[in-house]
Structure formats: structure tokens, C-alpha cells
Image (cartoon, rainbow, N blue to C red; front, side, top):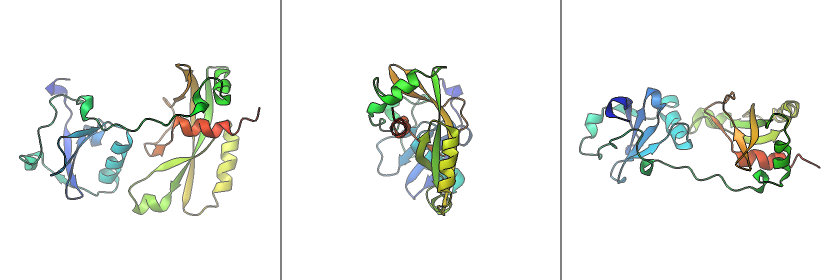
Length: 213
């Protein structure tokens, strides 16, 4: 991208030594981060990654940062990368998803997805939110709880879990398909929240337990 296409950046300082730059509208194009007196260079958290979600909630949901002007940082931070988005060497990368045999050919999950009539198999993911942590912790996080092949089974499971005080449960419909000879997760067009956190491995490992033949 050229200079004219660079997004505006909102600058914040938090924890007394971390500088965050939210690119675009409320960081919808990513977040720069820099630790004063500790970092060698800027790092960039692409939008929708776990690191981006953590900082986004910290600033815009919890208000745990102070707005600053970039001019106040002159002499305290290095120049920003010349291009946007910055080269990948600046990116904060998330660890690769752990390997699971339940996404590979020959597994029960692979075979069930492979024979789905439309090429996509809808599945229903149950997520759990700790309401106390959402109110006083580091933000709102809805973590993987379980997965089912039928919505009715997911709904029944949630009913049995609703007696647990302090937790809320959510059902998300996503799809599995075969891509590159492995099971792939499809979330495009699904009704998801930025607070939702789950992986293909978690879904496939849980579904494998539900296939009895």
C-alpha cells in the first residue's frame, strides 16, 4: 500500500510502559504494540487474532488505557514501518493449531464430512462464558465447551449446564468440509461474535467421541 492508503491510528498507553496504536476504526485493521525500554521494534497484531482481541477489549471495553498523541512518543519509540500493513516480520503470530488425527483421511470425522450431501457438514459448537471474569477480569471470552452434530443435542446439553451458576452458554452453527485432503472449518457467513474462541481440533476431537460406528 502507498502512504495515502494508510489508516488513521489511535494511540494509547497502558500498564505504564506499553504503547498501542489502533489502526482504522477502533483498530479494525490491526494494532501496533511497543514496550517502552524493552522492545527492539514495533510489533503488529492483525485484526481478529487473539492478541488483537485482548488489546481491543482492554482499551475499548474495559477502558484500561490512556489516550495519547503520537508526537509525545518522539524519541521514545522507533519509526513505524513504512508500508501498511507492515511486512510479516513485524506480525505477532499465533502458535499453529495442534495436530489431531481426527482431521485426517481414515478418521471417523473425515469420513462423515466427506459423505455430507452438500460437501459441507453443519455442526453445533457450545461455548462457555465465565460471567465473573467478563465483569472484573481481562475481558469477555467465550471458550469451547462441546460440539454436536445436531442442534437439538446442543440445546439439550446447554439446558443441563444452565444450572451452573456464574456461567452463560452459547450455541454457534459452523460447518466442516474437506479441503486439501483434511477436514477444514468453515465460519464465513456464520453468526459469530469476536468474543468466541474455538478451534478445528477442539471440534473434531469432540465430534469423534460421538461417532459410534
